Length: 319
Image (cartoon, rainbow, N blue to C red; front, side):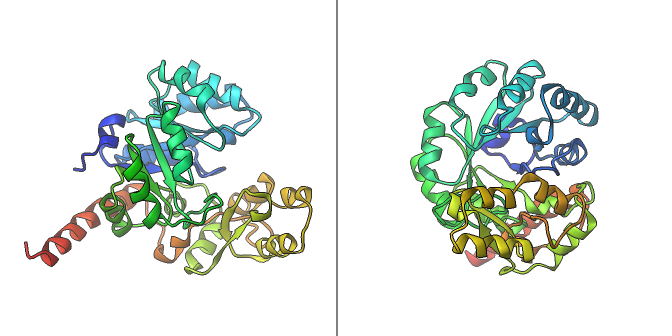
């Protein structure tokens, strides 16, 4: 049993949150994560509007009686509808990302929802604390997704954040097994957010070709795209991603780069299996992933492995 401020705040057994995972954070995956003792999320960006999101919030309640959450990207044009959905169908947790969530935090908290903001830097985390967020996820440079512009690794980012924040800090980026989980807690985090590793589970609807591409990846098989438009993303290396980097170096206009990184490109890879021409967001920690277990097996492996790490550290200290 793990007891941290995060487990107390959210009423979960283990201090593990599933990442937003655009296109992949379905009720089936999220409920499996929650039923395993962690916190599962569905992602608002997967839905056309309020009613579709509300329907799957209700679906989540059918699939689990454990706490779960919704990820809401503040920068999306449908954000007002998404917020209305979680106000009308209140959920235990909302994780926000993208822009400043200040205009929405208190309204959601008044419904009993805990608001956790996802950020790539300490300065943004301090702002999240200032506007009243209950906790923050700090995303290190290793992450699959959007690590920000500062290129600071999880190993440095988390203890720095813990030093300056009063609200709970949740570590994300490069965490794929018990060793990373324990390391994050040792750095002062109250929990972890895991993204790519949950893609490689049986309950995830990701296309088999996408999952196999992740399984084959090593620690140098990801690259950063979108730096030229200040929206960095870490993706699995493939011809399309390499062409994006090439065009950025050549000074391609913003409009061209935006068209190359559209959500349709991500859908093509993750749901349709186009591993050559689509975008596959992936953590550097893919080199630590070598199978596709059930969510329950993965969570139990992390927690059981954490106990083994603890025993090893006790041995190093002569206990």
